[in-house]
Length: 499
Image (cartoon, rainbow, N blue to C red; front, side, top):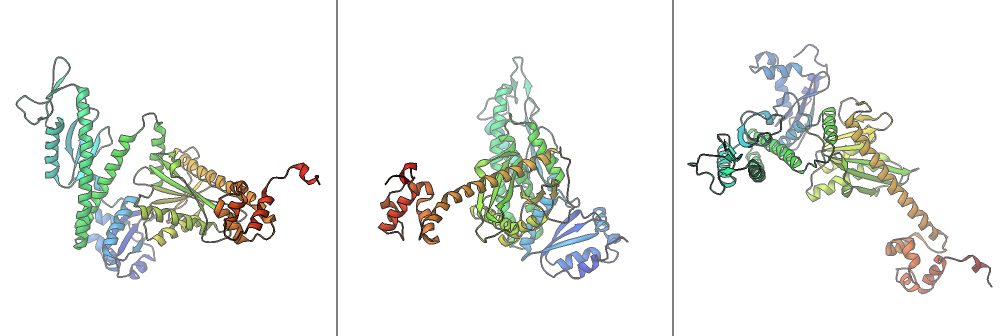
């Protein structure tokens, strides 16, 4: 171990429980450099700190990791399968430098379609590049993948990596020699434009196949975990995550609006870098609490998709669990209600949750996820005074330049949540003022008042009701209904003067 090892590190290891969990290794700057799972946290983590371990390890990468460890955190879970899933989620969230990035693993195949070519071909590769190509995979079953590509060549009339097309004098292409019989349903002579339509159809087909294989891999992963083959389950889990990531990028490629400014994508990518996210936050949700002197406490949640407001997914909340002024309890309640609903409906969490506030509000949001027994997605707070980004872990607060495009997206999201919350609060105040007219009607207690408003919905509808309709409300007889009807009718100025 390095000589500058923190004094409390060995003490932490000594007090670890003999239970399943996940451990997070950190360097001297507090950065997470490795995430691992363990059947026994005590035994697994202790193995890193055996005397002379760094000198006896044969792999340079592991030696370097051991020498870099300056601190650690652990998360205890109920079972080893739960540790397996949590490990994967944390690797996706933090992308530690000493965890293998599965998308770069050379053991598994990708399908690459170079859209820059005049006649794009479907090639196999083990390396993904940042270029104009579309990628599908990774795929663990290479034999099945090769058979599928051969089927696609016959079905759609596309070129694979071994194709040698010939350009004809009239500008069309002969894809294969006439002796080739793979192109059963499509002609071998085709224009470049018509060939691209074939490519689009084949890509759609391959994406569908990818989704079928994804479901198969998920089932294999769960089966391996059930047999306690956790190393195999972890390998399958990483393939699942990588394939999910590729499919998510494919969906974005297909739905991209060419009229949308490129700066939206650039802003989200800059936010990804600033927050150390595994991918740009395509979906974001922001929560804000609004109240007037502790009364009429409400909350708003706004949803952004690809950096733009998605008003169909806005939500607003009245606080139900308490009366008074407690932003933390209010935040815990509304975050819990929102994501309990998504869990019950089987819907995905957003890529990023933003809380209008600081560490206290973030802590309240995290308590909600603990109560739900759910792993939160990436979560930050945005403190308005200095536009400071607050993290839920040990990372120090972050202040981005005020012209930073990623910060500007967060500001728009936060300001929209603030506007939406204040609008809701103003609506409730107006309704409260209109309803206060009932306070002047003698003999009307809270129970009857609630029955009236529950029955009619608003003062306006109550004013328009007849005596008979008012009398239908429980607790109102004919006489009281008639008196209330007369009380609510507008009085003309000369009525009080007439005798």
